[in-house]
Structures are given as C-alpha cells and as structure tokens.
Length: 195
Image (cartoon, rainbow, N blue to C red; front, side, top):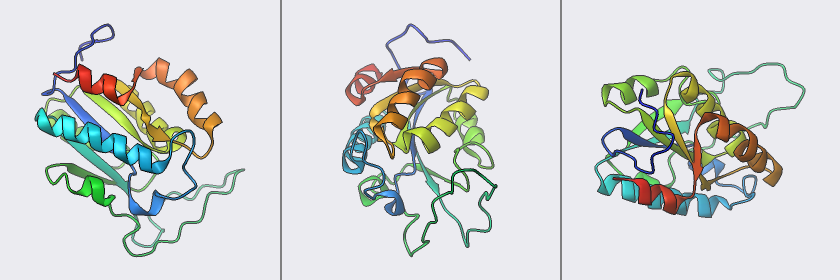
C-alpha cells in the first residue's frame, strides 16, 4: 500500500470511515473522558455525513452476542465488566443508523478485524486507508488500530470522535500508541482532507 505519511489528502475512493461500538448499550456514563459519548456520536455523524457526501465507505462496527458464550472469556487480573444483554443493546445508535448505505460489521471481541469480514470487505473495495474513531479509545479503537496496522492499512485517528473510561487511558493511547500506527487529526481536519 502507498505510504501517504506526508499528504494532507484522503482519496474518497480508497478511504473508509470505521466507527467502533457506537451502539445503544455503550452510551453510558462509563465512557465520558475526555469527550462525552454524546459528543463522540455527534462528531462521528459529522464524519459519516462528509464521507457519505463524497461517496466514501462508512463502516459501522458493533459488538454483539447471542448469549455471551461466543465472546472471549480469558482469565485476567482485572475483572472484565459484566454486561447486561438487554434487548437492543447491540443496535447502532439512532443518529448513525440513519446512514443506510453503511456497511455493518459485527464483532465478538475488542478488535474489528479478527474473526470478521472487515479486511475482506475493505480490500474488495480497494480501500487502503481508514479513518478510525469510536468507543473506547483504549479498547475497541486501540485494538482495531493495531490489527489494521498489521494488515498494512494507512490510518487516521479522529481523536475528538473517541473517548474512554478515563482521560489518562485516552491520552496514553493518543500520545504513545497512535503516532506509531498512523496520524492523529481532529474531525474538522479529517473532513478538510477528504477529497
């Protein structure tokens, strides 16, 4: 894939917007730092509208399960949050569900590539660059970014369209991880880059 490190231009035919876990069950007070979940959704909608207007691919990634048994359950030092799988918890938030031409990818773990058809669908469309954001910066977005890096995708991180459980988690990933995997920009900067 072509290295576009120094370019301030995104080719709408080769770039996809990938939105991570912006779904009903994750729009809680848990993910509010440094950006509120509402601001993340609002900024994600701005991006989705700009990408749609340019004819670029929008991908909505959600985490879902039938009964929890198809999800990872490793032994860890930190207890994983116990989710209540109430009706509709895995549905994309209404503001983004209105983008009916978006591709929906369902995952069963933190990252959006492993065990899904995301890479296949991007490659079939000639996509070599992704703009990534969503909830949470330090889990779903970070894991997906590392997977995308391993697949060779160029990446732009829309940092004001993501958030985490704690400001420190968000800042650590944005300061130390993302610069090694791609480029960080604001939503407005990404929209300005989209050709």
